[in-house]
Length: 326
Image (cartoon, rainbow, N blue to C red):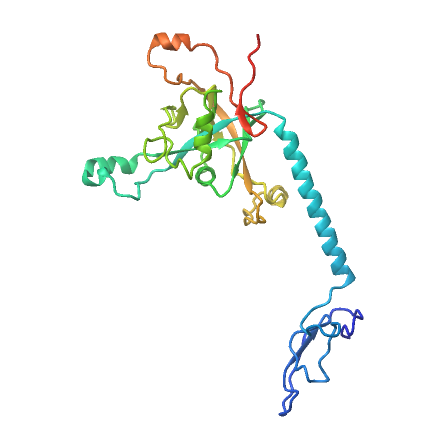
């Protein structure tokens, strides 16, 4: 039974009618779920579920379809309002600002430079790691026992997320425990480092913050025991090792699959226009790094800088700091 003139019927298999003899009714008619997909408008056999004067190819919606669309629209509106409420609340809560630094990849620059004319310099550049960093606004400590653990989220796609994911996958495939080897350094920025936070949050404007090339101003740093950048002048720095692959926050069903099967394939990235997808990284702190004072050049100046700097925080859409206790 077909849907005919607004009457509802159970779904039926799509049927193709084709007249074999020459006539003015030779056009094929495809009818299913009350919709005419193709028909000769002059044929008396062409079914139509549309009102007078409308196109025969226009489909009708069942009450169930309308209810589903209305429910989906309502849920989407509620979710949108919830996001707005959460953002409004968290804007009133100061968040620490940190920069995660790591190694992106040991590679040569794709552009020709002075090292191209010097084979020795070119070879040395080929094996030097390329340092990279990204500003975090979601960094937090999540546990102290039995191990100190921290967590942060990164928007994807991003170079830092890709680099850290590759490190986690390499560690899993090797099967070797590297508890003491850090994959990254978390630099907790000081009140005077708002520009540093901005620099590492805009890779489009500052693609090479650890060098003086392009628009980037050199970010001063020292290297940790693992050869990772520790930014000068920060409140403190933590060398951390990933405990596993990142958790996709755009598909929470992935968590259930991982618990049930022990291993789950990373779901494809799907996000609607205007939405931001991110991944959660959990890391174990392996070492607290000593931090050089920003611009400190001698022992006397270092002694004057012994007072602990105030932290940089993000509050009400701007960088600020807290008032020191008197």
